[in-house]
Amino acid sequence: MQPPSPDFFDDSRWPLLQLRLPGTLASRAYEDCLAAFGRQLDRGERFVLIVDLSRVSMVPLDQRWRQVEWFEEREQQVRELIIGSANIITSPLVRLSVSAIMYFKRVPLPVVIVPDWNSAEAWALERLEEERRVRGPRPG
Image (cartoon, rainbow, N blue to C red; front, side, top):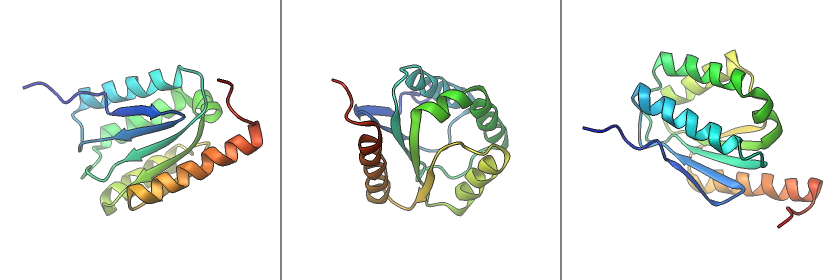
């Protein structure tokens, strides 16, 4: 049996990047997901992120520590490129896991936790509109 594809990212509405996790990932799939996220950062363009964690039931401790480490490795890119992150979380355990990550590694960007996709999208689109007002329209 093959692990699930790490390609959970949807950039079809760029600069709105969507990450939908199908559930708690095995360690290898989690590393692949972090690598794919790193490739998004390597584009060098500012974006807003929506992370759908609604199907995740628990984040293993090793993955929480790995997330802290990954943010430390990518801190400059995260600070410069991610306009904000809306996290869809419905589980109290996942909310606790995310809070623990944010406690150990203060994320240098606006982050909101919301209960559903509509709330996440509305928040993300507001960040994009604010970005356009502050920095002007994207060249293109």
